[in-house]
Image 1: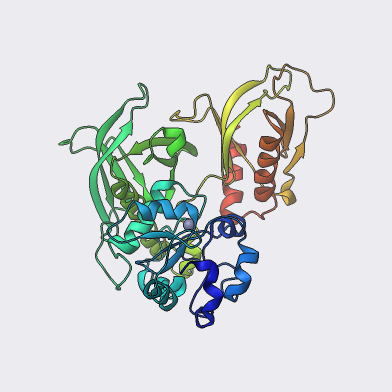
Image 2: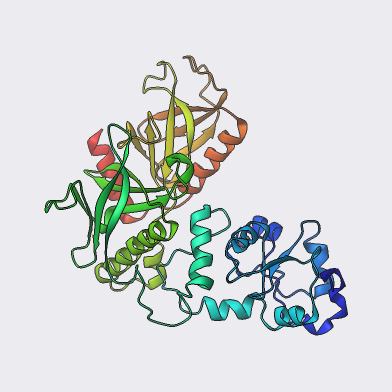
Length: 401
Ligand SMILES: [Zn+2]
């Protein structure tokens, strides 16, 4: 049978959980395999009204519905998943029954039963390596089916090679990295046998975020840390997607346990929200200097929560400058356009102005979409009240300038 005839199977209405469909995921913003979306329990007859045109996919061996994007990943793991179109492929009765008996909710209860709280569960806009390893971890390696399983990111210590981009020559070379929960730090060594690390960074000032496009490698990971209130970037990759995602989750695991000890009264979810974070926005803008008469220069900008950094090259080790972005109650705002009468030559015409208690920062974007995207990102930060720690950071920025 084909699935357009699924109304012939009224018994399937409840067990089938339509938690997944490419379109649904895209506008629900919840995508991660098997996650719920609002019409998860709609009667089957109504579903075509909500998921109208795209072909929908399912894994006949796992018994789950999957979106277009995840179907490609499943197809690459034929040993565990056989992907079929609901609309175009033939489903025999046994397969329909299997799908009916399982479905996303039941399958989630099995394969996602024991995910460590710090484990990063990707969403639809995460990169390929994160989503692929998430799917492989669940079904191929069955990492979450039983509690307390020992995995490469659960031990509180990890040692291995990552290919690190040289700060000056841009060449990627193998470097030994060591992560230790006991010491609360991440180190790397320039020589395999050297005793002294090139750097040793406290785990609570580290961030890690996948940046495949910027780094030019599908498994590219950006590690940043604060040194004297300045952000230092390190770019690494490993040819194995599993290895680089294991590193990422190992860092999150060590951070989680470190913060648990440092903030014993914080809830697990509060601590989870303080582990690695993705940047709010990145991209090119033009900027001028404090006099607002200097020529506008094209720079790469990164908004990392309240830190706006700009770089000459996206892969620079240090930012050329960092600006603290506070909250509206403290005199910060973002405005569309440049102040009237702004001089100086800028080649891009979609302006925006960040107002801080001390000065105005003038930027121009190449497209209106960029301009609106940056304004939305700044607005989301400025609308949040500042925490006591953030007041301290703001004071540090003021002291420095
Ligand atoms: Zn998906």
